[in-house]
Length: 381
Picture 1 (tube, rainbow, N blue to C red):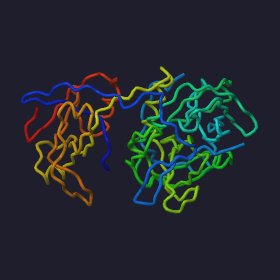
Picture 2 (picture 1 turned 45 degrees about the vertical axis):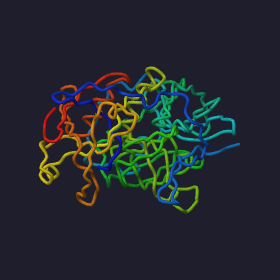
Picture 3 (picture 1 turned 90 degrees about the horizontal axis):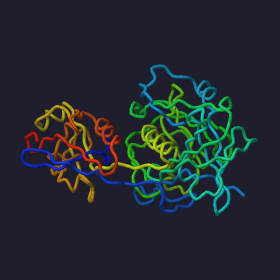
Picture 4 (picture 1 turned 90 degrees about the vertical axis):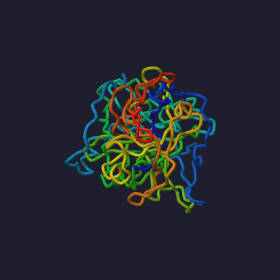
């Protein structure tokens, strides 16, 4: 797994782990303003990553059981037939004019998910289900830290086709995926591809990092922003948000697109629907999952857990005294740091995977405390 800032940490004493305060990463509002086609970052000296920008023009999620990856896939035609009617055009009126993006229905109440950067600074938002109709939408809430916004339209339940949400943790490289959106204004366009990579880091509109983004070669262009990335079972596994244009300087797809994972979106959208804002609990560590091979190679005191790689400055982890790795090693062609604390529990629950730690932290609020069980220099504390 590529390194990425995870969640979870505490302060250690000689015989016990102290309690660590969680810190805000971000809350809704006050985001840095970005242009419609904002520069997002660099890969090397010439490669740029851009938001899948809006195209310039003149109930709640409830409790959802995460589903496993599909064992038998639908054809592209079946996916389109099943899901296209739940995909909408989003037109946002901003100071520069109108901007076009995509979105998708998530319930019969009329909630729609799109990207924050699609509606950023909008004075009016409209949603179209066919190309002809235009419904005024209200902005329920936005989260610049995950680039997610929730809209709501007043429409009869029979007119709404909610898309099923999948489990982005179950996605693997090579899985077929489908994007449905409105590239360059061409409504409900289907593009196909595969999951090209996982655990990518992309930059949010407020410059924070969105971890575990899904990379795909399905064509994503301006106007796709906010639309669904769908798996072979017809379930949404991500929200298409950004593209890399490489060194070409062109504005279209070169086969490298990124989607915010739906498990991240699910949590943010649920909070937006409930309170209109998102409070992010944050611990500030980067971890490596312990495997049997790594445990054997480096004679670790445990066969499972998370080795702390780095600790982010000014985070709860840093303040609590959690230690990252100091010894660089290479395993299967990937570079890691060994020698840091190994997290094996949080608040009495066992930690084996990053998801274990993330799920525990997402249940917390900024200012809450957690207690970690760790190994340091071979001793359990």
